[in-house]
Image (cartoon, rainbow, N blue to C red; front, side, top):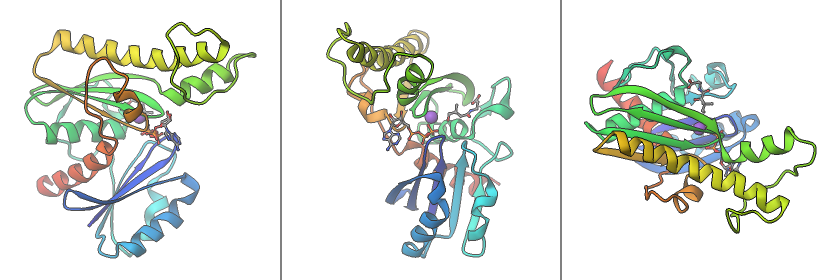
Length: 244
Ligand SMILES: Nc1ncnc2c1ncn2[C@@H]1O[C@H](COP(=O)(O)OP(=O)(O)OP(=O)(O)O)[C@@H](O)[C@H]1O
Ligand SMILES: CC(C)(CO)[C@@H](O)C(=O)NCCC(=O)O
Ligand SMILES: [K+]
């Protein structure tokens, strides 16, 4: 059994895997890390490996208390990945994006792949059919958009996610919901159209905290898998064991 842990910018997500099957999913805050992992390992005593991808400010040291219980693998740029990294600044590429790209490469061999992760930030990652990771885009996520409108203005209230009535927002609240939600959807549909115009034979993977909300609203029909990062972590770890 493997415990996969994804330390995002907002919260932590984890899953226990038996082979490629998820036994249970967990979501928690950074200050609960040690307590929650202790509880998970109490429940799943057959866990032999703990694998981590962290883009938050949680470092490897935070997991060392579990070192006598199981093997810990904290993914870094030094690991072996199933794609060729063509990013001009490979060392600054987020480890979450590398894991997503690895998962896409392993799960969908020999085709063009676009991974869209709608989390704190929206990230776009493109891996071509020859397994070259080319890059993509980073933009503010849904909640970040609501918060920035409020934080950087005097008069805009802090709202929480709501489906707008129309693209023509007829009040401050509706104008904000339209700007944030419709803007978000138009952005993603726009990117997908651009990729479709330039590449054939490609698959889109949509994941992240806002994936399900988003999937229903896109003009392009794509399948959402909120667990894709955790599944990819588990798979990339297996790939590492097989290829190291
Ligand atoms: N309980 C929740 N807490 C925070 N965000 C949530 C929650 N439920 C849904 N969301 C949505 O999820 C988005 C954040 O996504 P996610 O949880 O994947 O981010 P994250 O933990 O920072 O991970 P990453 O850094 O990998 O994006 C927010 O834009 C928000 O709209
Ligand atoms: C973009 C985020 C914040 C998304 O989680 C993360 O992947 C990150 O911190 N990336 C570093 C910059 C880059 O990927 O080029
Ligand atoms: K993200």
